[in-house]
Length: 574
Image 1 (tube, rainbow, N blue to C red):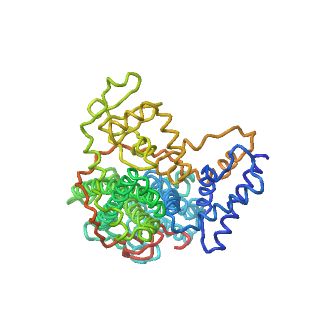
Image 2 (cartoon, rainbow, N blue to C red; image 1 turned 120 degrees about the vertical axis):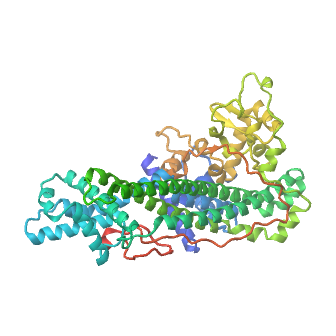
Image 3 (tube, one colour; image 1 turned 90 degrees about the horizontal axis):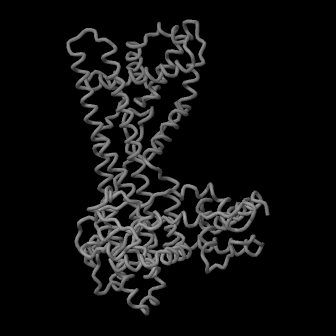
């Protein structure tokens, strides 16, 4: 079967699965279905031979299995996969987000820009109309108020006239398109700087939100909320881990607890914890950036005041660069405001993927499972074995790294997100944190941490064996591919000339799943200094801050409202 035909078959399978789920009242995205197809095929218990072409019976079986799993709404594994798909479709790095955000803003301004740069005005009325369009462009680009608000338009017009009077239009019209675009951007920055300065002096600033004040309130509220959610998640993780540890020592108990899907619940909560940590890290970066920008903004305003103090005329070469610096800083404030709102929104939308926990593990059930077990935090586990380190003399051919002898030790990219591969492979998928202080093993250019020295020694005796065991376990629980960052191990492609199942699935859903293959290897971070958790401790609930901010990009409102809206207003709506 040719590759294009094979891809068509898989796309039809994905479409059929989606329709079947919809018929049962469950709406699923193509990306989720694509991931589930891959998960079902990888699971050896389903009996698919990935080296041969799909036949009709294979297709029917695949559709049935996928639909069954997608409709099993009480399964934590499905919740985890949904969470992973949602996060990867909605989260991007800070740098990529800002780049895309600016690209969207530019695209929305392109039609207004063209109306100005392609203009051939000559009559007085035409020139006046062109000047008004430039004022509108300046307001839309700056995001400082609506171009339909007469007070804001008057203020912006006055600022523009002070640096670019209407008489300059004749010269402007002789410029090349590229030069016109550059001048429009420069004029926007200068006018923005003037308006921000006037606002600071109490002589203007109509329709300009106090973004520093908004951020000063929003960032701590978002941080506190994520911190509280993270603490709750970790408390639950530690309890699940304690129960599963107890199970590994008592196989009979393990049989009794299979119905509870404890392992799947642990994977779900660990994934949630990891995503919260990623978001929190970005929020902290926002806080650091905003703190630095506030100082710079205040310094620029002070410099500008000193420059214009008691002077009737000031050379443009002295003030224009400061106006532009103020504008750039304000754009950065706008960026951080949008970003913090999106991160807050993302955090809130992760919570529905935890629904199975309360149904499966009400507090009474948890207390019964815990019994007299001591619940340990990740930090407790690491501290227990801090002194039992790997001895280099025991290994002649393997390379080990230690904090006191390795530059940038905490920047080493650790496999399995820093979890102990040996414990996972030998304890039926139990996730225990690796302890970098014991020693980090370098094997085939990859780095591994371990929960104990014994685990490190055992893994080092035959790394390939444990790496293969982990891969096989991930085939049975596909959420582990993302959770433990095993993407590369499941992406081996065979020659295009063979149209078999592995090739068809990999190629046909490549676009849908490409965002799930980021190389986000874990970094080593020192543990929080937290004490042992008692089995009765529960994290406190805090009110959820609604940090959704509108009116930042040329909205009609003069004030900022804390409502959940699309933050970037389209030009065609103005």
